[in-house]
Image (cartoon, rainbow, N blue to C red; front, side, top):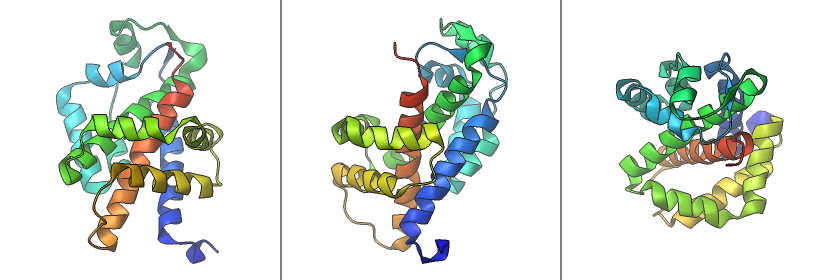
Length: 195
């Protein structure tokens, strides 16, 4: 039955599963915090973040996950002025992985389509709360029903107003990195406590 689904849906499903599973694996021992986990990314050594992004650009989110190592999340959280708590470690794990996915999507769009992160931000904001909630629910609930998420990915892509992909390989790449970006934004929105 899965083989009957369009490739577009399969790729979205795979990315969501990878995002949900990766969030738990990447930062499993990390404490949670109240605030913006983007600061954690900024505190990571630039050499590590560059290697992770380069791996992700070459091989997608799974390749990025293999390269991304963040040994002392508690110290980074403290350095960011954030209050860490062991009780919410899964929230931090999910939000921190969301930052990584968002950064990967931003890097791909900037490198390949010359779309700056602020345009991606505007497109995400323009989707509206209902569309964002669809992706947040899928990430938070580890939902296997991604048909609605596929619709959000399509709407997001239209908002970017890019030329159509030249071929199926380019379309697949766009789908992968669009999914990475919106999954990252949704993970952050679902798991970062409100400031």
